[in-house]
Length: 240
Image (tube, rainbow, N blue to C red; front, top):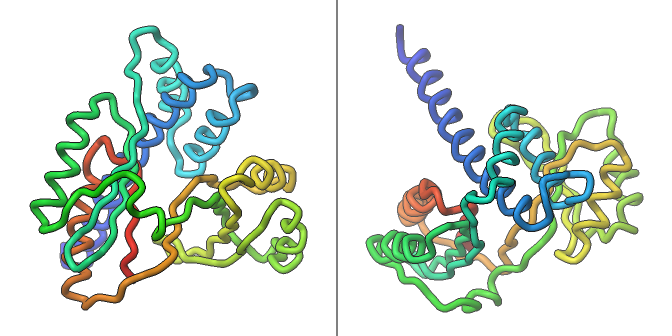
């Protein structure tokens, strides 16, 4: 059928694989939110946010409901959030957020990924000077949204930055950044404006390191390996 068909098939399989990983991570976030404040989104702001994010990436409604139901059961798995910090080869800092029901398994896996690649696992807090936690909100930017006007309106919500980035399909995505503390305020403000946003707490790099393309490919291969782990929720680095 030709190379074009094979390329499209490969791209589709990669997208399906990425969706599966996203759904697994969202399922854990749902479980933690339910355990924390109950199964009702109207009284559980964390769960409401996760459901909103799940819908934004087309997670099926029945799968969302099933995750909430499982998390509400007495014998449901309890996940704990843990952060691991370390260094990959070439001095690149790596911060890994996890959600696990087996800490020993998770830390052993993370240490193994780093050491096999020539890196090392560090102490908690050792990378505080490199990463800052921020509230990030993303939504599709279109001609019906005046971003300059919106920027002025969001200042009262703690707006730090408003910029555009591309998603995998080349669509323009507006990104709103605030401090960690202003997450709830900005979320309510954006919801009041009728915007369908994906809301997350993320780690922003305060300083970066430039390395060669060959070395960067090595680091990205390591990050891909770490992200394949079911216990891993997010991976951050300071590679330029």
